[in-house]
Amino acid sequence: LMEDGTFSRGMSMAFFLTLIFLMRPFKQMSMLSNSIQSAISAGSRVFELLDQETDIQNPVSPKFLKKMEKGLSFNNVTFTYPGAKTPAIQEINLEIPKGETVALVGASGAGKSTLVDLIPRLIDPQEGQIFIDGIDIRELDLSNLRKRIGIVAQQ
Image (tube, rainbow, N blue to C red; front, top):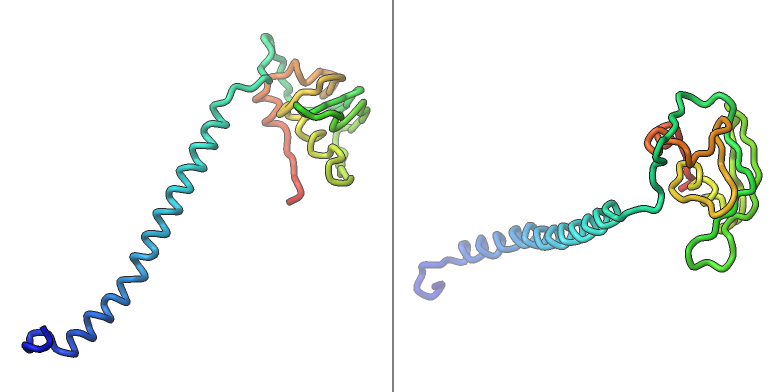
């Protein structure tokens, strides 16, 4: 086309510049497609987790906490993760009076997160009991219990 004069050098330069300017949006669109596919995959895994049945159920006749009056206590609490040979925590006894601030400090794998996960019943101990105001947390309505718990985890 350049030889017969219908396509000038200026038009050629404009054409190539346009191609260069269009390359970036097309590249971004292809990257966006990859991101969307990853998000869809991750979302489906999240929904699979949400749809899983849990062993932790509401009691038949649940009790409801209005507000904490006394405190939280762990009595001989032991928890072992499925497949583990040794307990993550063993025979823990702990009293936390209402209004106290508690920091759990220890080495990695010492059971700090396990202890915290037991309070809202994300997991249940194999042995021992956890009480709030003298009521075994397994007798409490799960939603009511979890609404009254605030946990600040270290990142």
